[in-house]
Amino acid sequence: MADPASYGNPDRDQALIALKKGTQLIKYSRKGKPKFCTFRLSPDETTLIWYSHGAERNLMLSSVSRIIPGQRTICKDKVETEVWLAGLKGLISTSQPRGRNTKSEDYDLHSSESSQDNRPFATTLEFTSSLPRGRIFTDSTSQDSSFNSSSSHVGPECAIMQPRTSNADGFRISVSSTPSCSSQSSGLDDLESLGDLYLWGEIWSDGVATDGTGNPVPIKIDVLTPKPLETNIVLDVHQIACGVRHVALVTRQGEVFTWGEESGGRLGHGIEKDFTRPRLVEYLAVTNTDFVACGEFHTCALSASGDLYTWGDGTHNVGLLGHGNHVSHWIPKRVSGPLEGLQVLSVACGTWHTALTTSAGQLFTFGDGKFGALGHGNRISISYPKEVQSLRGLKAIVVSCGIWHTAAIIRSYKPD
Image (cartoon, rainbow, N blue to C red):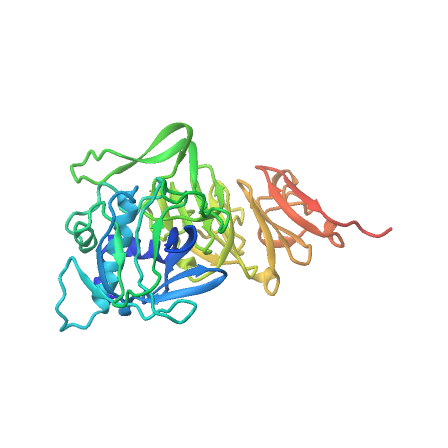
């Protein structure tokens, strides 16, 4: 595992997150066509993991002998290449014995992995990218950070991880989600491609600082056609939701990211700060989240196990967050009470109310009851989830909220 003392570097931390999330890489072999495989760093930062022919393969970073410059022409995205190089070099250097003599630009590593016929094989990692997806390091990243220092040795070159044994078949992998000019007809059908995010309309962006600090000031700009989101982390997007002034997304790894205007806690980061790019909701980092929904003032998230979390501005006296009070929550809080022991399947946010369905087909609503939006036969506001009694006996599948109205899809009907 990497040296804990080095975790204060934000660039390093962002790069480690990117490596742990994984990237589709082209794996080259001496025999057969190149194939796309998903490579990622293990959670404990000790092992490089990939999947080939339906089986998990791995390489202990502590057993690698060297990273050396590779073929320049295969590399198409300098930023993504440098992230993987710097990340692996940083982890490898900390895993080496302290008394070992190694050059900063030539790390000694080795591999103990074997091929299918139990022969040791050479391992080379050749990193490229052909997509301008989420950027790990932006142009404004610090030049004196340890991660940028290590990446400066390689420039646009590719990395090769070479084991001490090299008398049999080897492989190479390239950071890419579309075939490079040398990959021919390989790969995209083997694995799902990464989910990229495109935005347009009134979008948050980094403006020019006016206070002399050099820090970007969040501004809004009009984006007239869909553009890929530029971010400092690699995002494999599973689902996304837009509020009036903020955005939330869930990755395939079950993590939640939010950005936009904070205003009362709706981003869930626990601080009063606007963000122009996706930021991990750290409170939910250990929760496998499957779905998010955004209202104007609040945000909801569903875990894979069916727990509902809400956060945001609760000071409008309508019970918007479902916790039985009118308190704002700047970090996610699980909704309990009437939902205890129930599995929530879907959730929807209106401007002033929230609705959800459970695995048993129940439909609950809470928030502002004006115009009968909650469906309880009155216009009373409720600060905790309450089942819609008129739908008992029916099976509510999914629900959607407008500003002052609600709709639900029903699968079955009451018997006569």
